[in-house]
Amino acid sequence: MKLIAFGHADEDPATRFRIGQYIPHLQRAGWEVSLRTNHPSRPWASPFPLQRRAGVICRRLRRRWDIHAASGYDAAFLNRDLLEGRVEYERSLLRRNPRLIFDFDDAIFLGEKSPHIQWICENAAWVTAGNDDLASFARQFTERVSVLPTVVDTDLYRIQTPLTAIRPVRVGWLGSDRSIRETLFPHVSMLAVLQAELGFDFVIVSRPKPDLPQVGLRYQFEEWSPQTEVRIGTLFDIGIMPLVDDEFQRGKCGCKLLQYMAAGLPSIASPVGINSSLLDAGRRGFLANSIHEWREALSALITDASLRQRLGLEGRAFVEREYSVQRWFPTLLDLLEKVSTSPPPQ
Image (cartoon, rainbow, N blue to C red; front, side, top):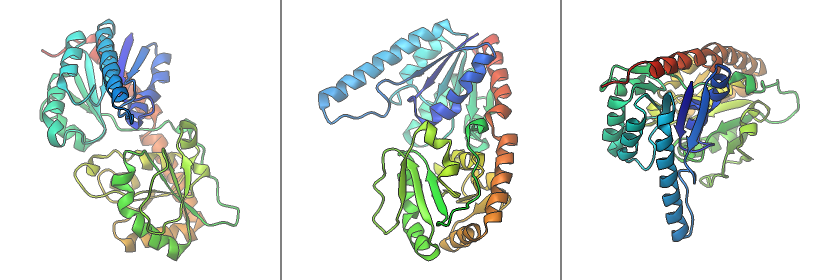
């Protein structure tokens, strides 16, 4: 069996977590997989207008070629939209291969994109959404919907080891440059105040180095790479996932928390969207909304190494059991086999 999969960019988090990490498992199950991403990467910018224009033309031509190739595959998998928010690309893809699974893990249907995403949901052979809230949008337009959570490959993550050196506890944030402004930046002033009070070190893993608001927060920067990502257990003692309670961030799938837990780290997160169920009210970490709640959660974890270890191990066991690639791969495999062997929807 042959699968063609479409993602935004090779190192795009959605591409890596929603389909890329499943590819070795699919290959072992007998599937031939071709992952097609945008080249040049999307988004991509150049200071030179002619170069930008050439990049756009090259990206469009490559996407047209990828779409043309789709007819030679038993099924197609599309994470988010194909290109530039223009439904003409998905129309063309479905003419070439109607056995399409449309996948999304953010509230990409908000705003002007809503009609576009609605059309894909209505016409795809199946829809996979990262959580129940996202799936509820798709179910307005089709019954062919499954929840496929964002998961992590727990085998890759190095488990956090107990703090033995005499040094401050390290609080860490891991994420992309696309999300840092909307999620971490609004909380930087609060973190600066708490750092002055509690004395923790702060570590950011991202790429490129962020230009944080100048509010006095001291931090160590570690450049993100796939290799750095899986050793966050050696860089952090506590992982955090602050969010702003808005419609888009309520649709997030908690990938940071899953990565922290996979590394055996205790977590603190805003009680927004899926975060509450992932942390389960203190069983695997703390939920914090106000500066008072963040202070209490950080203080408890900073001062109690045994608590950090207990929550971290509980989180690791939870992710292995409920949110690992190994747990969800059979579901994806069954769905691909179903879509590839069933008549496409009319």
